[in-house]
Length: 473
Image 1 (cartoon, rainbow, N blue to C red):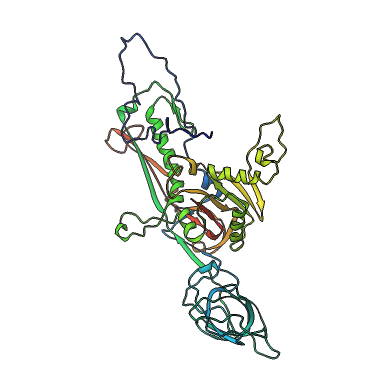
Image 2: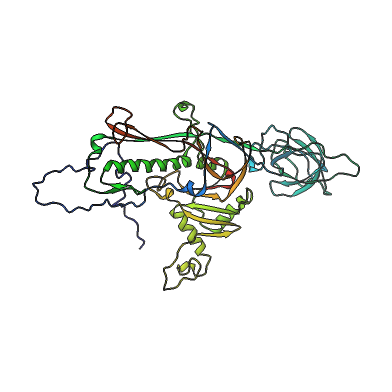
């Protein structure tokens, strides 16, 4: 019979993070008349292991300074011309036909610009015309163009148009340019095309945190040695709390860049401005898999087909939660005839004298895919176990891309993901920390306390978002 993980005892989500000192932080029982003294362990037990979730951006990105409230960059548009919603009113077997381009901004991911721009089709170009209902295709030469969005084609085929159109405003066919043809002694091509760059922007947000402790509590020595993930330890509890505040702030520096969204609610415009986080950017300009975890080769074939239509980046890293990681392992193991029994995973050379390797680090199918566990998606205090809006993984292209940096005024190589923080010759806001008060070495006010302040101002740039994949529930 199949088993399951019991509901109780469960896990704590907030073991000690509160806004007031806990009565368990310090000794409260000073009854020395009790003859039964407890045995105590001197060191705090780290039952949750490494509790931090930050590391993703350090692995895949970089940090660069910026001296502006606005960061802008240009990304290349498509090189070739293709329209997917083109209408015609021509009849079946017509020798010529008038077509109207009805595509709007970004549809199909093939064209940029605006719906009112002139079409990028010129007289003398040869075009492929494919019926969107699958009934056939034609090839023809453009004989006339009426700007902004109408052109006439003379068909090469003997019987002319293979399928009658519905209306100029319809979406009967897909058209793309594959070349040109001119008669002897004629003039050259009429008109030229300008490069179509897309301009993107983001703006930094300010993050803050603070830890405060009064002077008296700083003088209180506990009976237990405390420690944190960054190696700080001692018998002063306030040091543990200060270091945990710092670690928590470090995590927020990364998770804010993942989760941030722009403030689109006009009623709350004065509360915050927001910024474009990585998840938000991919959902709006990238690729999204929804409806569960891709757990079969056919699912990855669909992903690969989409990548072929985008930048076709050779190497990609998939950051996964635990279920997605297991699904990939099982999918790859099933490709081996003995995989169903779990006897020959990995390089298929395990034996009874070695620990059985039941996991994979990557695979190649058209592209190279590397798998990496992402703690942020598993942590129960963050995205782990969400009932709605869950994310199973994210695919990030490896390497860098060349973009035109508006601030530098030149082309520059940038990682697909990188953080820009505010900085100048006199002010560096990448990671600021300062102490105020009159305790702990501070002498800035008459308050009997120490306040440790943290501040950062930053934004994340997701370049080439069309090469990213987000795997949603």
